[in-house]
Amino acid sequence: MNKTKILVTLSSILMLAFLSTTLVVAPVTVGTLYSCPADPIPVIDGTLGAIEWKEGVPLTVKLYNLNAQADTMEIEIMSLYDNDLRIYFGITYLDDRINPEDYLFLIFQDAEGTAICTPPHNASGGFNDNHDMKFMWLHNNHTVDHFTKGPGYNWADDVSNGGVDNGIGKCHENGTHITVEMRFPLNTGDSLGYDINLAINDSVNMFIGYHDEDKHIDWFQVRESDNDYDLIRLQVSCTAASPVPVIYILLGLMVTSVVSFLYKKKRK
Ligand SMILES: [Ca+2]
Ligand SMILES: [Ca+2]
Ligand SMILES: [Ca+2]
Ligand SMILES: [Ca+2]
Image 1: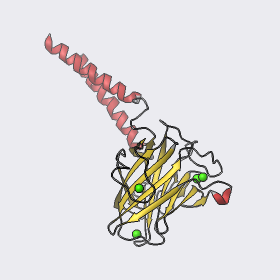
Image 2: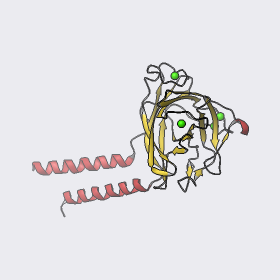
Image 3: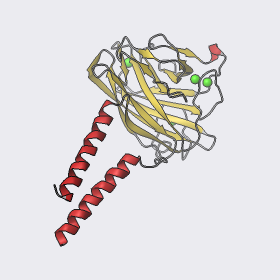
Image 4: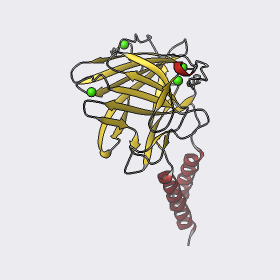
């Protein structure tokens, strides 16, 4: 076997090993939500104004019916932060009616990195305890600062557990879709409420859920038939601050070396 064949074979083997590793890793991060500096600062009234949200970078996130994975819906989420170190979320999704029992929530993974969801990843599963949960009741424009607490897909509110309700949120419904606007401090120091503790350039895993009482559906990032769940990564900066993962550098170098080897060979 000549050098070219050896190099190409080695690259293929490493690539296959890399792909098989990524396929079995759970949960799956399906996108990065970049939070950019707000200019101007959004007014929390439930409507996502074109000027106040012009710095937002929309991320489309797929949610799955907790009882039937083939049934999906998409939401669009944006984030901003301001000089007072408060973070904003702007969310849009299709729903023609706000039922008094409709609710939406964002969960942020705790610092220890415990998995957000426990198997089985379906309606019989649940959340692990003590992940910060920012919860929005849609019918009365009211956010409640929570944290996850079992059993099942359950939660407890910060205030009843010695913590502080640290956020505000409003929503707006126009007959076809709903928009939600929420704001929270990046770091409240509220350890009893298990609040996020973030600074600029930090990142944290997020999980999104929406309950539509009109259709009796829980739209979560749980993928029932895959027995897995999705996450998104919140990055508190406009671009990725983390270095390129080593595996990509290695693969990039290998591709470069094969190409240059072949190029040199051809020139001989
Ligand atoms: Ca607004
Ligand atoms: Ca609804
Ligand atoms: Ca709190
Ligand atoms: Ca909390």
